Length: 306
Image (cartoon, rainbow, N blue to C red; front, side):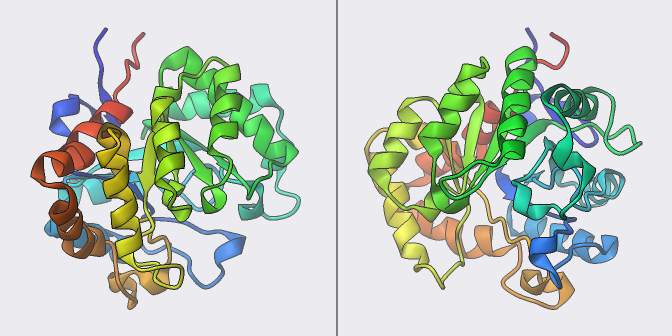
């Protein structure tokens, strides 16, 4: 068994990944985010350069099927910047798709075949392959489409070993999502629960980590909810409880009005320039190394040739 990380420029050894921002978007178009489209390769490339200069060696491009992803452009950005990029396939929660989008009617088998093709052949008519698969859940709810996507993702992950990311709305339904994926044979330790920190409850987070799940902390700079200190205190409590090996850090900035290269703020660099130093102060260099390097490399490693 040879574990690899599948990037948009090819497979690499897990040890080559480096400090990783586990959740960002370089291209994204969604009816939920009108006026905040990420659709300019030059601007998105400059934003990736800011992230690289701030200290990131790698990132996960978390834009799934049907939301303006541009895998060929992501590969060019990766080649230009030296930023290693893992792209997801899969599908988001239903609210991100326009009413009548044919994707919403696809059965489980068709969804699984679609995602499998993205992992092993290439996305959207390119040879750029995805390295992880994504699903999305609503706030304490799942539509019929979202259930089918979770079923397809669970079956695909069980059969291939591919890493999984699941969007949790406001951090809800983490246990329930893990139960649904496990019912399809997907081990919990292949799953990263995105936005778990939108519910900054360290007891819940330790429970999810005890099941093997990775905890996606990606809410930095969302000060309309709470200050960054709330997230850092929560993360430190999780680490103190022995779950530091399950924490991932990302920014999920995801809007052109918040990207410096598009004329907004605070930009992708905020995570490494402003948040990471405070995490280091709270948990120390050794734990931070696990959070930024060892944990994402472990989560993103699988054997595509099995």
